[in-house]
Image 1 (spheres, rainbow, N blue to C red):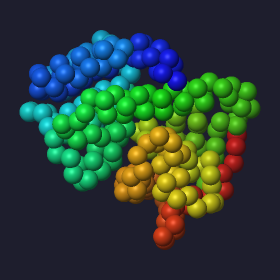
Image 2 (tube, one colour; image 1 turned 90 degrees about the horizontal axis):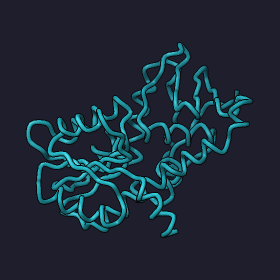
Image 3 (tube, rainbow, N blue to C red; image 1 turned 180 degrees about the horizontal axis):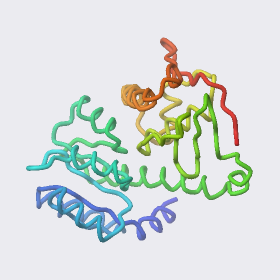
Length: 252
């Protein structure tokens, strides 16, 4: 396992965005020593300049920065389908973590954080993305016969294109986390899924079990689905148990 991770690290580019010179240097130096290829940016403006000319596999993004904060920058990244983001914040309350996850961050760490914990979180996010990519690559035959297209109540979900369209054929813009959560529901319809199960399905088996984060993500997903009248009660809350995806799901 360590050898596999090392190989993955060597090809992985990480962008560290923080207005604190010392923190940028510390994180960059530590990650470089562990085989990653890192670059840094002092602000969201500099981050976007670097993104325009270079592909990155992950961004470590500070929340509290002057002029433009990290949450505003994160919102812009979600609109452009940017790389996964791990948020860092000196304000480490549950509310702040929920807000970061709700806006589409893959993970959230309170500052000051142990560099080894940051390294572990980065590898967790990258492993999760790698598994998802491998899953899509191993099912070409299923995709050809329509098995990767799921339908329900007039909606259409293309697993390979990561696209959800409503009955009027309008595309619903979902973050990566929202798409994984939606996929968990449509792949396990008409059965009650607990919060722990949804965390495992939607964020990976090695993610933190953080019940409130799932409640927030489901609330956000419901709001996006509610743009269509037929989306009423697609996701039902089962008191003291979890959530259930109500419609019958068909393939092809």
